[in-house]
Image (cartoon, rainbow over all chains, first blue to last red):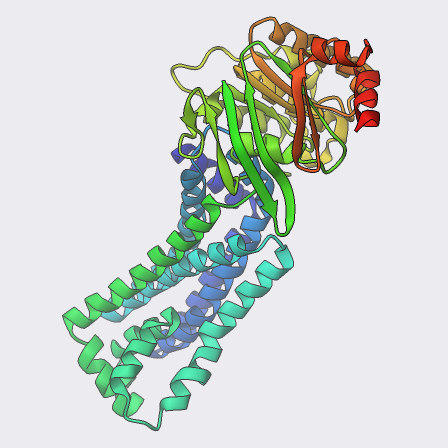
Length: 252
Length: 236
């Protein structure tokens, strides 16, 4: 399996997009921290960029990569290799390289300029979001043979998680006292969950109103935080497991 | 060596394989013949585990191939249209395959075709720049590279120049004498005459017959495979 991961890694590195993505993140995070004299202002600006850009790049790049490796996958499947290993290697290669880019491009500057709890949680969320969206992309790519359709599904999923979900679910019920429901609903969207976890480490969580207080009571505690990380971990595992199951039965 | 029992496969509504049952043994060289779209390639792909049958199963040396992936170590496969990662060079593809299939039990690689086809001189060419014929040469060399016990060749000579085609046939005959199982599909029946021992004929997903070449020749009274098949098709 490590042999396949090696080939996936070299192939991704040969593709300049990941390097460009790293440079782009590095440029943004460095400029944000050097232009703002206040680090928490810098963190806040970075927050939105990370919650939008990281999932978008992860999902689109991974979907296109899987489609473009169709030949490679076909070649490997006819060899004495387990399909499970092929698919896991692709996942490891993609998730590894995208998390690496995030860590170098945004994680290191964040940890350097804001080494407190907020910096740590932000880096952790960025890494987890990268991995979750690689898993979602692989599920989207294995669902359909048509490249255009697959990329369309990925873009839609990204739009759903970063925008539509809030509009359809959260804003619909904001006038009702549904705090428990809100907590469960936010677990259904990894982007929202990461946003809440990061905001709670900032001083501005008081601005989130009554719901903010409920979130603070739940996610602000140690067990709550552990549950949040567990949910994010489940997002990776369940999505990847579904895509793997599909890939095992796929005709090539 | 390979036993398929009641293998069926549908693509959507289309029945591609319909209850195919067949036994292939060592030392046989089988021609898989049939019109376009008769399910030949799908059958080959299900032997390789690239297509998963809806029902029925295939065994290799008594083991169901569905859960036993190591059997592919003994198979050399030459696809109809070889598709390789575009930005790899020929040399990288060969090295990668050697790397993937290398283990302690594997025999020395067989680079005869590689040398005969003159691929050594073009090792640094990228796969995307190759002509269809050169791609076929790469596929053929890869299929024979690891001395497999079973060779599955899907239209091996399509796109090859006459010289390369002769080399490949020479190699197939040589491997046949080593008691291996060889499965060939082709539409050029005249070139199969000197290679094969058995004939499988498929039509619309059904296996119409699977018999020895000699038997077929006797039944139809024709010596040439092309004429014999034509006689069978006329009778149907």
